Image (cartoon, rainbow, N blue to C red; front, side, top):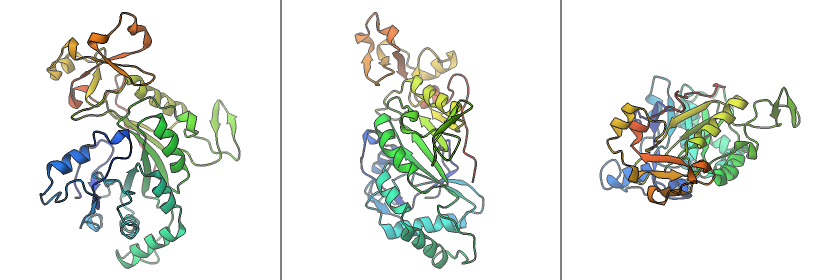
Length: 333
């Protein structure tokens, strides 16, 4: 598969492997699993969502127009059932096609860090790029690959605290996170990630703080859509946005997901939702994401920051956050 896509932050997808398995709560309503199992037994997904490598490793070599390419939108590139030799070949393609920008997103932070920090892995990637894909031996070479944006999925504070430090400890030209589906509030300052100044030691200057070492270069956030989608409190997206603004980190708000805050929808959005019923409202607490139905709503609950959310569908909920679209990208190295 080397298809164009409706994913807001990329131009096309490339799936040299497909299939995956659940690793955390963010996987509960996996869109890729839904698609793959729906078409199990067909030419596109003969084995459904079972992990398998595919026959399109070379596809990007024929793409002439430079593009942002989401790698393995239907899998996790660092799944333990994708062999290390296959990863040599996949990364070799990235190295041999510097005109493209490759966006990798994983929940397998441990294997990511172990492989990409290994000099032997980098050596094998270059070998495959030259011997298999024809990269000239005299071509410029850098590791980490300058055209690779390496990211981790973080659906809540627990996984932000675990996966982000591993990402920061992994060689990468661009490091980013995808907080989608966002299932709880995330304070990135707790894991020392959003720092725009890089000094020789920890310190402060002009109200900003910095640490000596890698930082995040991009933050993407979004809600959950599809069958069984869980609501996200709008303040979770605002908090991430405000942290990024303060520290000068690009922020892309992908979408609210299927659920929308009733108090912020326009009349047109309400009409497009088609279902507008108080009994269908779900209230979400800002601190921990717990929910309660309209029937359980107490007279004093409105003072606790609960958001009144209704499932109106991804299209009606839209991409605007406080009246604007946030489509920021990291600067290319």
